[in-house]
Structures are given as C-alpha cells and as structure tokens.
Image 1 (cartoon, helix red, strand yellow):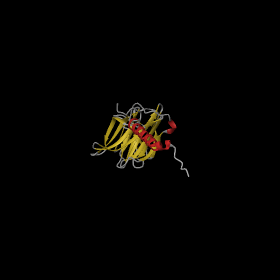
Image 2: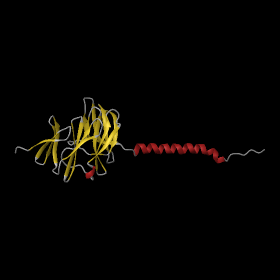
Image 3: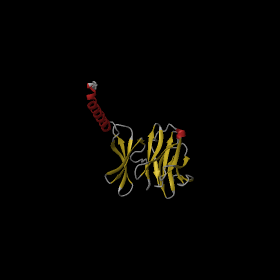
Image 4: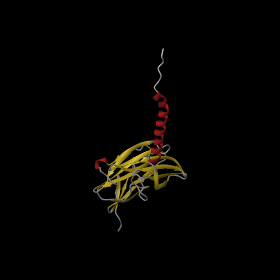
Length: 220
C-alpha cells in the first residue's frame, strides 16, 4: 500500500508561525514603548504628610494628566486622568487619610475623580453641575477647597456659580449650593466655615450643610 506524503509546504508552517509570532510581539513591544501614554512635566506637588506627596503631571505629547502618590522619591502608584483643571496656586486636589480626589476637565464637563490612597482603586467620578454644561474652568478664584474630610468644589460660568461638597472617604457628593452670578475671586476653609469672596461680599457657609451663616461686607 502506498503511503501519502504531506505536502512540502507544511514543513515550513511551524517556522513561519514562529516568525509571525515574533514579529507581532516586536510590534506590540514597540507600541507599548512609543504609543502608550507617558508622564511628562510636573504640574504641581502637594505634601500630604512627612513621607508622602501627591504629584500631578502632564501627559507627554497629550492633553491628559497623571496623578501620582509618592513615598519620598518613589512612585507608589500612578493613574492616568483627563486634563487636570488646576494649576500652581489654584489647586484641584484634595485628600484624606483614605482617599485622594482630583478635579478634571473632560468634553466640556467638570468632574472630580476619587482614588483610594492605598492602591489607586477608583472610588468614583462625580460630574459637577451637569445642568450647566458645557463648562469651562473659570480664569480666577479657587477651584478646590478642603478641610481633609470633604472637598469643596467651586464651578461656575458667565452668570452662575455653585459649590459642591464631596465626602473624602466615599467620593460621593454631600450637598451643593447655588451662589449666584458674581464671580468668586477668593476662598478658603477655617474654623468658622467655608469663606468665599464674591463680588463685594465675603460669604460664610457651614461646612456640614452649605447653609450660609452671614455676609461680611468689606470695611472700606
């Protein structure tokens, strides 16, 4: 009985598969090295305790940003985020012993991303004032205020302003208050509450509820 012989080209099939696989792997490595997002220049650094800091960095060659938790000079974790809304002197970052939040801009939306400090697991993302979209970050005034239990996010437009409180342990919104059309030019948090300079008034809000305590007008 005659035995059939396999076509000669089958003998080349195995090496061809190996070569193709190696080429695909090389392309994948090149892609990961040259196309994947890479962190660029440092935008701002926040010391959160004697050993740790939160660092915001630009994306090299892109419009997004990176959020990092560092222990000394060692990066403990790094998260790719949409475009950071803050800048030096106008922070968009807050933190507690459990979480870190960061204010971002994405597709004409104002959002806050929340991450666990321990491992960068995402707690959530909260859209601010969606009823007023499209939104752009205002050219003056505070962006994010904090007492390290909550962040107080200020967002506004041509004829409106809001402040939204976010729990820094859950990443969820707690309350929001409409503040009216006058631009907010300064703000802070102290033992009395959240103070805002809006137009010719200095306003004071309760941290727990957002209720306004009083208006303090300038002396001059």
